[in-house]
Length: 60
Image 1 (cartoon, rainbow, N blue to C red):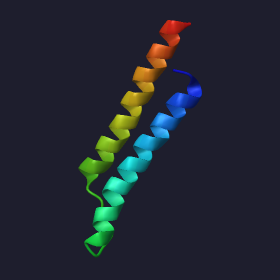
Image 2: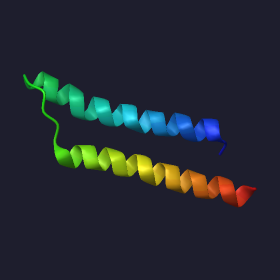
Image 3: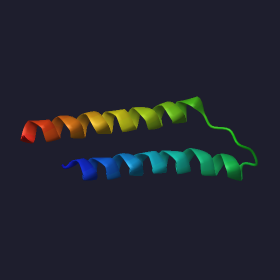
């Protein structure tokens, strides 16, 4: 995958994570985000960068 595709995937993961954590908390009447959800979002982004970065380096 090229750098643009990887960037789009990572931005999509961040957006899904933010909407997945933020929207339910706002519907509940307040703003609170579970630390586990934040950690999972960040780990998903780091893993995506690592996996796609390694694959693109192998192809060169």
